[in-house]
Image 1 (cartoon, one colour):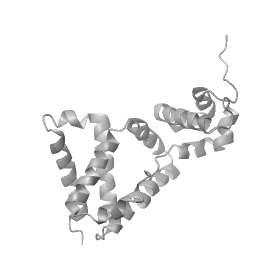
Image 2 (cartoon, rainbow, N blue to C red):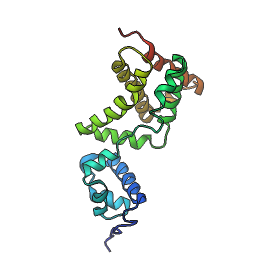
Image 3 (cartoon, rainbow, N blue to C red):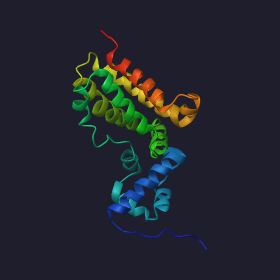
Image 4 (cartoon, one colour):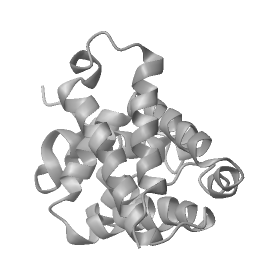
Length: 199
């Protein structure tokens, strides 16, 4: 007997919308953008395809909705860091990076970002969120020279650590380094990005 999708489950509810987003993130991560269809997403979410269209209009709009968003406290971080000595600011950033790369959502976010690499407009969106709206305001608030260059360098550090943690198991490579020593290594790297003379 052919399996049928339940039509319009919890039609129009915010819970249904989140189900669609969750299904889409997982499928984009598993299959990439091209091979993921509205029908597959609807089937995974347990809703009718028309409800997916109702919420997001197109697959492209749904894909954009799956892109990483700035964290809720991102707007407060620049002023908070600016009030700290540079080494303390680096330690705080390092701690947040470590917490972020160990988040249960990291795998899906990385996979969706990899799927985004084939869509220039999606790459532009990630750049806007990560650089323009998150890192650049922080570097600017700190009053550092060449804020765009430092933001790009810090972005490379963050994304590099995240990918290494996900793909290579960085803790295994670090062997017997304890958590404090690992955090210190990351802190020193970030501090270099924040303080190295670039003029």
